[in-house]
Length: 236
Image (cartoon, rainbow, N blue to C red; front, side, top):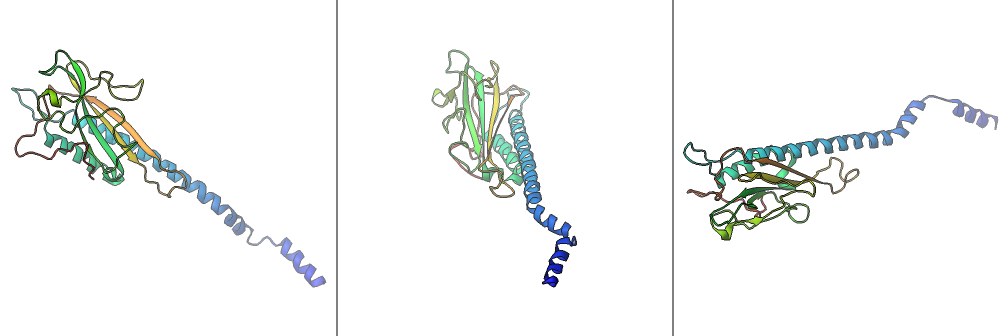
């Protein structure tokens, strides 16, 4: 009996391995908090990257076209394909075109040959990305797949007198010119599954006024014709 009491007394007083036991007990909490910090830091990084992609895309689309010293700059399907390919490559690390949807709208505030005055409209749209449905397709306006493909009233596009964007932050093109409006919707890919962030959609927009003297008659597609990246297509 005394031997048992002595053993229990010695065990109770023993401090060897206490640090290891304390570390073992605290390790799950340390791991949980540490991985949460990593996840949220990565989410902030991805948000910034998506925002920069949208800005770069709008900036590039506002500059491209077939320039001439004798005529206004023509924007062509091949130009838009190049711009979208650039966005796809820039966002390849995120799997942008696999997990997201990119929409470019040409918001123009001009008078066409068939107008009686200046009209603000989405003249045409181009897209890439596999994602579709609520949260991925345009939240601010759509137009037909043939809009802007010729200089006829039938393909004039969709009137947007109040502009594009969220209420209170709508973008309007200056009178007589156009603006490129980009919507980018991306499904965040978490590092640790859905433990910390569940089904998070990153949504961002960007817009730039067209830089040059652009021909707003239509989006051209001279021979050899390029594939139109219209918004009824869902491709990576």
